[in-house]
Amino acid sequence: MTPADALKAAGLLLLAALLQVSWATPIEVGNGHPNLVLVALVALALLRGPLFGAIAGFWAGLALDVASLGTLGLTSLLLTPAGYWAGRFGEGTTRSSPYPPLVAVALGTIWFVLGSAIVHFMLGEGASATTVLGGVLLPTLALNLLIAYPAYRLLRWVFPVTGRERREVPALV
Amino acid sequence: MALGLVVLSLALVTVYFRESSGGALHETQRVAVSVLTPFEVAAERVARPFQDAYGWTSDLLSAKDENEELQKEVEALRQQVVANETAAQENDELKELLQFVQGKEFPDDFTHVATRVLIQPQTVFRHEVVVAAGSSDGVRVDDPVVTPEGLAGTVTEVTPNSAKVRLITDPQSAASALVLETQAAGIVLRGASDKSLDLDRVAKTARVEAGNIVVTSGARVGKYESLYPYGIPIGLVESVSQRDVDLFKRIQIAPLVDFDSLHEVVVLVEKRRKR
Figure 1: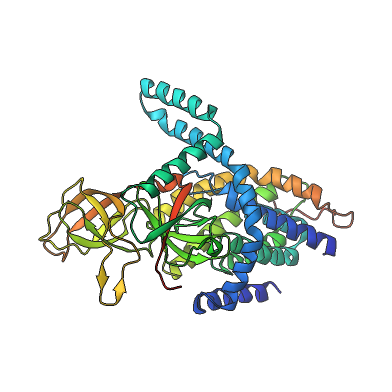
Figure 2: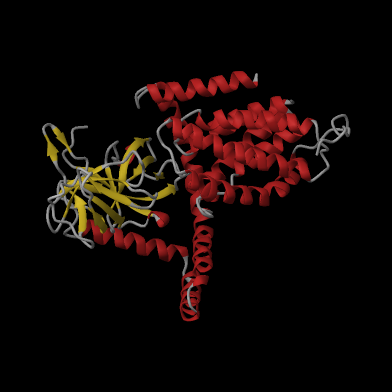
């Protein structure tokens, strides 16, 4: 992790959080919205590994909670493991393949939506299972998958993979 | 490291919940929001025309089930509305707000702060919006927020340039209310779905019919006074039922405010409140 990478990622995730609250949230299909922050985080973690992913997830969660005046730490609680896991997943996959971003974003979305439901339920802010699964999870999954690969390509250009990192390991996916 | 960050997140959530609204984390968040608000305002202004276009496209898609004649009508309306400039639309909304605050139904003892919705609800679990007016405009925690149609919610958190508003459809919202026609009193709570409301605690002997108007009661119980002034419309009674095993009537209300297109709101600021 270079300081330049860290600064670029911090700025990019802050921008993603601002775009999320002002641009992405009004785009509503069912009760779901595209989650720009999650997609950007997963792409970053795939490119830079689990440690970078975890720190980026923590920062992205804080940025989102501050930008939306939400409960501080709640989104970090979900995005930190998501970033870490996506980083670990990226270590075992082929970076040039289009499938890892799609799989990672899909699993990350499922984790984030179900995790949100559980955390909010524990805080006494539950919603019905039908709303969470049909109204939020499926539309969010579809919207996130739509933007997953373009976002990954864009971030791969912003965060180029160095020669040593570009080695191809036996792909899991 | 990752585990440490998860534990830190948990600690943040715990401290945030346990501390008062004047605590260190809340204060830090308010400072950070003050820094971000200008960017959010700019992003919201840029996004507004796209949001409007998206809204109309969504409406068109949902209108596909209607008959051909209605589709033509919607198409004509869409073309007409898309042709309108966003500024003109904002102007209309502000004029409507102006009529409302100058009208007879505007409560005495209150002044108003007209403002825009900056951030729409982020999840289905919390029905909260952020508006572009804060303590520097005189907005305080617990101030009621209304639209020309009726009650929207209350201010729950304030920064110098923005405020968080908990909508009346949020599970944690409640408002003392009464049925305008019969004066039957009760409490308005979130209903079974996230876009409906219930009027709870209405005695079974009270007379309530579908179509009745529900307004805020402005009730005072002992030293506790309702946050809302009397007479702000909340919704129309949709259905009324009661069962032998229930203590109260079951009354469903359709809110008058369209929470899906909440763009301009008015914060009611009490003139004589002790600050």
